[in-house]
Every structure is written in structure tokens, then in C-alpha cells.
Amino acid sequence: MLALSRRARSQGKSIAFVPTMGALHAGHLSLFRRARATHDRVAASVFVNPLQFGPREDFTRYPRPVARDNRLSRESGVDWLFRPSTRALYPPGSTTRVVPGPMGSRYEGAVRPGHFTGVLTVVLKLLQTVEPDTLILGQKDAQQAALVGAMMRDLDVPARLLVAPTVRERDGLALSSRNAYLTPDERRRAAGLHRALAAGRAAARAGARDVRRIEAAVRVALRLTARPNRIDYVAVAIRLGRTRLIDNVTVTPR
Ligand code: AMP
Image (cartoon, rainbow, N blue to C red):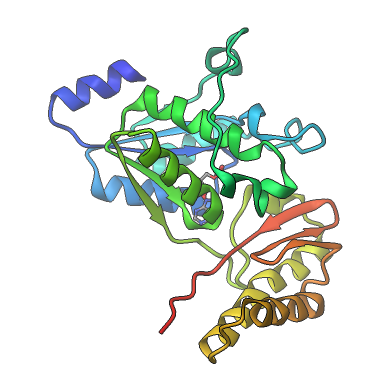
């Protein structure tokens, strides 16, 4: 991977990189197309990173449709699809980790201890292996994008970060490989996640500035629409059955 990238770089080509865990959907493909439109070479990776999964999470059952991912990435303009093995990335004895600042222990990090240490460690390793001009991540995982951006600044990674907008289903549900776990009833309720965020945004736009008021609007809407089995935090992540879904909207104060 590094040899390919360095050869292209020496020929003056710009390189974008999109890391994924595979089970590609239209959200991933929009990142590939964004990369294709703005760079000479597009590198993507598929790696289900064991380091970012907790002991009781879905690492083993995470979907791995290899042939389909190969085809979809080729059709969406990926030049190089990088599929490292776990052994290649984490050979025995590799114990160094990239630990995020305090924001890494909030929200997703509070529910999934160690998750962002796993994410930052693998993203830094992948960045060292691809040496892209631009790293492209999705807004869907807002906390991840913020922490990766902080890591790149803090550790002087010589690439820029581009955060691309969330791609949604018609009913507002953000595309996610984990949506495949939902039963038909859970899938219907899942649309309530985005609807509840919209209620929070509406409250903010209507002038609410107290975070607790905005949160309350989101929680009320969530209980009515998604009827989640549990609300992990309002910023927002919920459980439908055993599946965790996260989503976010940004609100610009006027
Ligand atoms: P994942 O394969 O879930 O690790 O996601 C790989 C990249 O795709 C991450 O940067 C995600 O934020 C991004 N991504 C996932 N779902 C979406 C979506 N619905 N819209 C835009 N980007 C997404």
C-alpha cells in the first residue's frame, strides 16, 4: 500500500483515503465518490478492527460481504482497496495505543470504554500506511471525526481531514451497516431517531438555549417515535432490541 501511494505521490498525484469496516452502503459510497471527485487517486480500506469492539459487542457477527464490497468499491471509483489482516496490523507484541483526550470518555466513549483508543490507534496506523493528502470521514460518526481531527492536530499528522455529510434513507434513518440487524418493527421505530433529533433542532431554532430543554424535547420525541429499549445518551444513541444506533444533527446558532 505504501509503495503504491509513494509512487503516485512522486508522480504528483493527490491521494484521498477512506477507511471503513466494510459491509458497504450508500453512505460509504458517497465518501468514495467525494474522494474520486477531488483527488487523482482513491484509497479505501476494509478492516473490522478488533481493538475498537468491547468484549460483549458484535465483532464476530459484524457482516463481511467481501465480494460485494470489492465490486461496490470498484464501481464507486476506488483505485486501491486495502484489506490488511489482523495479524499484519497487530502482530504479537504490538501493545502501543493512541489514547484520546477527555472527550474520548464521553458519549460513545462512556458506553463503549476503550472504543476510541481502538479507533485512534487503527486510524493512525492506516494513515501511516497510506500517507494520503486527505482523510475522508462521515459526519454520521461525529464524535469519531472530532477525535480523529484532534489526534491529527495533536500528533502532527501531515494530512487534512474532510468530514462528509450523512446519507439517509427516505424516512431519515442514517445508513449504517448495523441497520441490517434490525427486525421489521425495530426498523420502523428507528426512523424516530432522526425525527427526535429534528425536534431538538426545532427547539434550538425556536430559541431554546438551555441544553436541558433541547435534550428534553429530543427525549420526549424519542419515547413517542422510536420507543427505544434504552437511551444511552441524548446527543443521540439508542438501543432497538440489541442493536445500537447513533445519529446527530448540527445546529448553527443564528
Ligand atoms: P464504518 O464502516 O461504519 O466504520 O464507517 C466508515 C466511514 O463511513 C466512517 O467515516 C463513517 O462515519 C462513514 N459513514 C458511515 N455511515 C455513513 C452515512 N450514513 N453517511 C455518511 N458517512 C457514513
